[in-house]
Length: 176
Image (cartoon, rainbow, N blue to C red):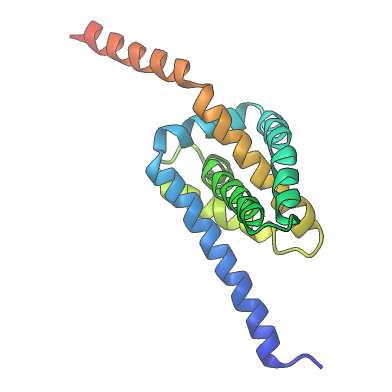
């Protein structure tokens, strides 16, 4: 028999995870707005590319973490736990671009980027609540895509940022 305490325990665990994930997405967007903007543009242009890159990085990374967690020495277990936690952290921070894209809504409005990130983060984390599909497909897929967005945001898109700034500076100097 399931008691009210068990139901409330699971309810509050889910609410806590949703709030923490949304907070990490928003913190990532607040601490690295240029990186988040580049990641958002990369995800909007080709959503499959961050997923493929993220899976190519995440599968060996998580296999190494799982193997280390199953080793006998405590140092190896600690290394596996650190690898797993870093993967989660990077997936959440890189996922801020995905959250902004998902929560963007109407691009004509001048809504603050943190509002878009919170709204998108809530939508993404709510997909994780669905049993089996959410836990085993959506959660690892969005975390891997977040890592792919982080990699694309760091290594690609800076050139387009520089040309956009140079174009704005050139246009401003031509007007005067």
